Length: 268
Image (cartoon, rainbow, N blue to C red; front, side, top):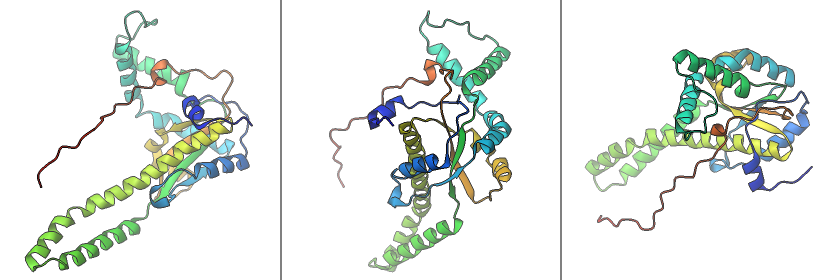
């Protein structure tokens, strides 16, 4: 197995949707999952969980749910294509652009079938977390008890009550941020999984379209409502004749950075 650097892996990894029929074994997937588990997570919670479908089960889910999941994405894809066409310098658009709504709709569907429709036999992996409502109730009660204790430390009852009321407004923010950081940990794992697969010579594609049909998907897989799927990843061997998506979907923009050299000194 050829060793690649982290920088090489980050620059070379691409979203691939056209795969060969070569099978990916469970031990190889387990190796990839273990490597991806070194992704950072808040407080080392490692809240990610994985559902790995077989090749046969993956094909079944893709056939049943892929197009349905894309239905709400097509308007966004159409807008991206319109904006991309408008940004092309004169003379660079070699193909005539659609002029009517019907032509644009057809153009979007043609683009989907040519570049974005999954082909071949990849394995489908779902990254999910378990919704634990009791955990957030406990967090709320813990925050509340802490506020009460700190309010009692104030020099007077009035100041203590004021401190309690003003601090109480921060509790929903605390719970929301806690949930957000856990989601970021799962996002880290998802991207690390694609890099781990790339290091093993495999192609991947992070997909969000299945989130649009999550309720029906959970029912089809026999999963409970406490399962919250946050991402899906295709893993397989890239087909030799895999299409290359337009440059519009492959280029990288310069990172917008606000450099701050000095902080404005404010009077307390």
